[in-house]
Image 1 (cartoon, helix red, strand yellow):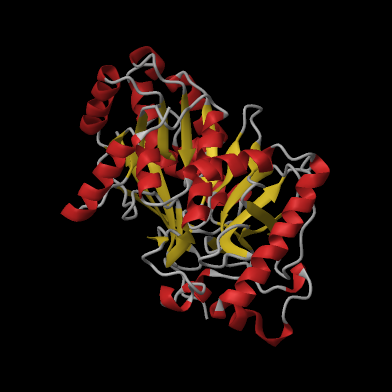
Image 2 (image 1 turned 45 degrees about the horizontal axis):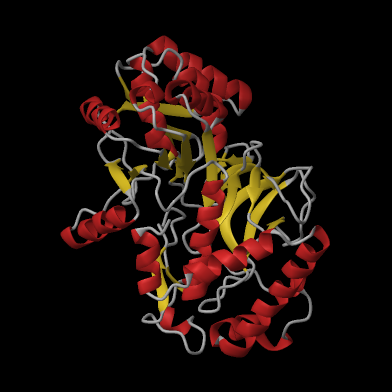
Length: 439
């Protein structure tokens, strides 16, 4: 079946048919040939950019390409300069796919992909969604995302929704009144799957929990729910499975790259080895053993318009011990490197450690709908929360004792009840933020 979206890709000269065929060839390579393919493609993309991209050639310097490990790590601050200075020879904003990152890392920038590379990204999407019996040519998507507020941006997104056969639920207002309106849409429409930001989808599941409903009973056509862009905790996954009545699938991607990891039918968070090469590195840029956490560094194997070679996403993750070079499995996505808690004792930790410790306590009983944590000084933190009722003194003491037990004593907390929590322009919810100014 050929969709309007496929047709729009072809009309805009994105060779989706060729990309799907080439991707299938890569997928079916025998194990030994897959390793050869990855290594040859790594070398080919570096050679291409050394010959055709002055930005990357200058980044590498006089040493040239000696070994893969000697190549520089590309970070987002490197890319905060005019796109024109970063494009390869022969590519312009007119003959490439150009977009902007979300800025959730605090370092947004404009990027480009050549049209074949972008078509491969869509072929990758088609294949991975197909693992869960979702045909992107025909499946109807319930989309939990933000939407631009200006007329032009809003109209553009609505048109893309039409081409892509999806209905958008804006996540900027998640009051019970709006969630009730969401529920009515699920009663009236034959959605095949849900896709969107984790926190918004979890909030909808909590609404269904209060109403003692299972979404699959309301909308029998639903097959699967795919969450993205934010951490999915195991307790939330259990909640979603119970009140949606469908499988919950975790995806991890970056708009400037591709889907990086996508949960397969066996519940494994399978790394994309067809269009990307993923490394987990320590603070000295050395590869860490399977099972140990480190920085997620990704290479786009096909993008000729713009180099993403050993590109540090700013995320921390762990590969499963059962990983192989042909089939690496992402065991854990821990958080962002800039979401670090600094304790008075000198200890440091990932910001989500607070979220892990407080989550089960703070949400016990269903009073708290959602919450975020901010570090304001070295020993002061603010917990903003949305709830049916204000936290009692006893509940606050319980939370503070848990934090003292698991993390560190003598930390101070302000608990602020809000009507709604602030999201990014795209609708993401940042669960931990540090406002520390470090010398």
